[in-house]
Every structure is written in C-alpha cells, then in structure tokens.
Length: 113
Length: 112
Image 1: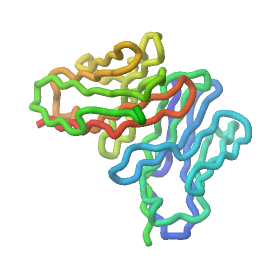
Image 2: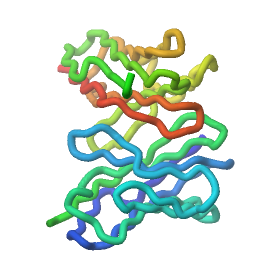
Image 3: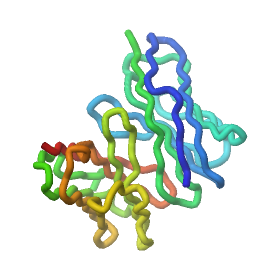
Image 4: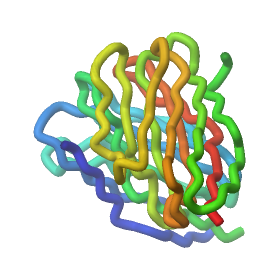
C-alpha cells in the first residue's frame, strides 16, 4: 500500500518569500501525484497533478511541483508567496492504474503580510 | 450535480447513538472516497468504491463504521454507537477512475 510523508507541519513565511513544501511517497509501482489546498473555511481543491510526461508541472496561482522519481519526491514550490496563500496544503498519491487516494498529514502555511 | 454534495453539513449526536452521513457524488464519477479529517491529523482514508468492484475498506477504524454505495451513485457512511473520538469532519470525494478527486464541503460530526 502507498503512503505519503510531508516533512513540514507548519511553515511561516513573510510575503514575497519563496516556498518549498516537501512530499515523499512510498509505493512500488507507477503513481499519480497531486497537491491539494484547503483555504480557511473552504473545501479541498486541486492545485496541480502529475500523471506522466514532463516531471515539472505547473498549477494554479503560480504553484509548481517537480516529480523526482529517484527520490520518490513531489515537492511543491512557489517563487513568491502572498498573504492569500495562507492555507493547508496536502500531497496525495494513487496508483497510476487506479486505486485509493492517500494523503499526507498536511502542511499549514501562514504568510505574514 | 455540479459538485459533490454532503449532508448534513453539521451533526451533533449523543454518545452511543448511530449516525448516517450522506454523499452525492458528481454524476458519472465511478470512484467515491470517504475520509476523516481531525484537527492536526490530516486526511485519514476510510473507504474507496470503484465501479462495481468490491470496496477497499482498509481504512475503516473499527467495525462500528460501515459504508455502502447504492446504484453506483449515492453513498452513506454509518457510524454505530458513536464515541467522542469519532468527532471530526467527514469528507467525501468522487472522481473518474484515474483522474483527480473532487471534494464535498464535509459533514462536521460532534459527539457529546
């Protein structure tokens, strides 16, 4: 069965700082990878996804993530965060052929104006 | 429908009572998931339905928890003899087989 580990539980940044949130997964086969975001009081929504092809994927609101197969990692990045990026971020993995979607513990991001 | 719909949005129940939580997935989505979200605990996988296949129940925390999906659409999560530790937000999501999942707003369950 797959598992996901997010290294940072709570990250505090000032506006315009760069962001990198770590995500590592464990699974013996090919995977699909996702980052979801949950803004305060809102439901989970997709930031970006990786299925195949270019390992550098771009999502909404200037976020991107890089799949490094050799490291089983899918880290999320943003060059310059805004106060509105304050939210909880979740990394998730599912087998490429289909199956349950497993999430990491989440990283709470607080951006100070 | 336009999105995943969950009801009720809030539920307060007495310890020991049974509760049923409902999920209406996006029309045409073959996969349906239930998760539990507790403060500081992330999203805990509960159960996964895919088409007519047997559901993956590996995440259900005890035999007090069960779920069914009728006609490949609506799903009900039932918690019997609720305990205080069952208090959490229960999230439902649906997807096509190998695409991203879309989440509902959740049901906040409080056991008193």
